Length: 134
Image (tube, rainbow, N blue to C red):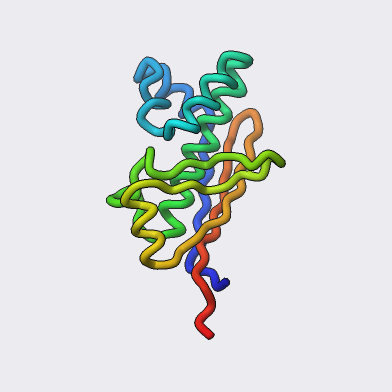
């Protein structure tokens, strides 16, 4: 595989919290895909802080991914078309759906993601790859 592009994003968790407060929680519904939303609600039910950290890392991953594929947040890259899920081992993985999945497949782009958070910040890093030309 060859690197197509990379993307990174850092988000201040307090800013995500402020948006959640201002939108009365609708921000999570707008940004998270269905599988992410289920995890978010489960984590938030156990701990408000962990729910917010999950939301911040997923928001950050979407921003980093949009940079790595060179589109920014414009069609076919939409908030809910990309989810960052976890394998049973805990490893984060990218899952695209709909027109974004088709767009990526046409270009043979795959991606790897990593996310991390601390009390004040969430960060993500995405490497978009394409097959080597032999």
